[in-house]
Length: 431
Image (cartoon, rainbow, N blue to C red):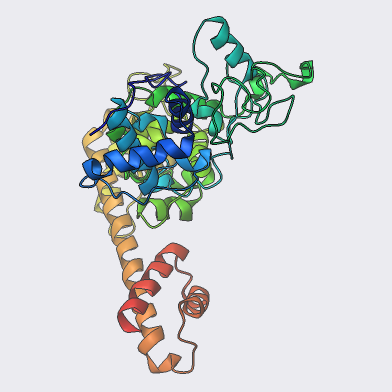
């Protein structure tokens, strides 16, 4: 197999890594080829070598810069083929994380190239070869994170967008007029400079820094689902799921947990922001390990050993013990530890410190009761859904899932997501 010059990927291992589109255009110029010629050359000499690893589409006639960034068959094939011929690891020059649970990010990538003139100027002054950074392709980033100046998409002198396949000059120069992309025709005004406290995409920049050297498999496809599942379980056990639903839409969260919905990067960013965790922690499946608060208005309980020492109330321990034992022996609905503390007019901390074994039983019995109640509602939802499609009482009803939901939701008052799941299962089995 023929080789290309081993031209290094610039900014590799940092948040300022070069984009794959930039690398292809720069590689073509260094070899004295038009971009289309380079693509056909790579396809001709490397397609067979990677055919057993990835699907290799036909050589494209023209690929726009933004089409060389999102993971797909074409990008995966050319990343492998070009990397093999140029002896480079190029996976990180793409937006490889826009797949799986965040694969619906259609509007996250801007068209063409964008650049920061001040960054290009610094590269030139330092004797470095200019290039287009991967992060400049994201629509969330409107200003340079280093200089706070607006990114440009066209030469300010001639209006050229730098996407031409005909590369007569290095990519740091305008392909039409030849001026340096570091030059701005009109001086910037103070209003053009983005204020640090209002910076767009700060979470995306942190995300790029977090994943710069992390293994590719550090963001598994099930990472988002696992993070939300762990958070939901934690706050459900703490009996604070209602507070959690104020931060993240319940139906959306449950659909993600059950792997029924793929979301966009923008939605994932909103969830991470509301939960107070980093985007990398959320997508990696480790959000539960974050020590951040979920919301400024959230009441964060101190863990044992960190509770501030205040005024101690004198409690009748024997009376409280007797009342706790009666609660455990009662046959009606077992209380949660919060309800038990409220009934006894004591704090949860006092009960857990003085009667740890009894409190553990109360928590276990309440959890079992809630789980059993939820399972009964699920069984009821399946029963009424089946009756709707087969029982004589609903003989004249329209047999559609939407109509079934409307009727049964009004008649039963069952939870929305539970009723919809039951209707979908029954519909698939019966109709």
